[in-house]
Image (tube, one colour):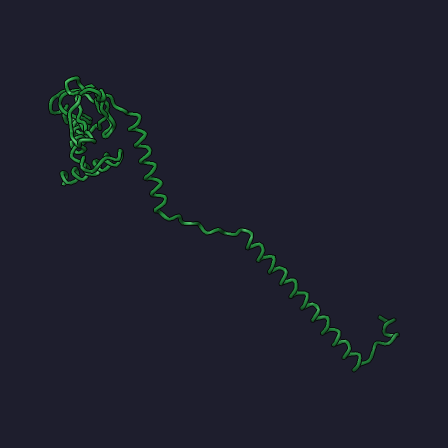
Length: 207
């Protein structure tokens, strides 16, 4: 079970390293070897913050030669391998380490060959710039693929308008009821005068 989880973690790290610099997938073997090389020289909590190499050999490993996987490397061609009118330097790609110090595995894109080179110069700034650009492209693609959910807009003033409408309607209804009642009172008074008679002046004076 532990081995299975370890292998899954290595596979995820291989995918990350290859896609970080836009490398071809056939370099997965070199990426796997580089991951194991770095992990053997990295501290682990089970080993009380010691590295596997330190716990095995009793010596702290040197990690000053660690570089970004897939970064561009310039190396100088020797006079024996160099021909006339050819460039004195060649641009290759860093793809791993070997046990000999200050020696690196490099991938020649033109001939698709893997070679070992020493005294090389790494273009670290360009590797960091490529990594940032790739990360930005991934974020942009995620934003395009994921649809944006628009939040419903709530009109705050709408309830006030409804309340004012209710108030005006109630006022109109109350005025209608008041006028209806006054008309009914007038009709009752007219009927009373016809049946009983209009009030005399004496009654009015007494009142």
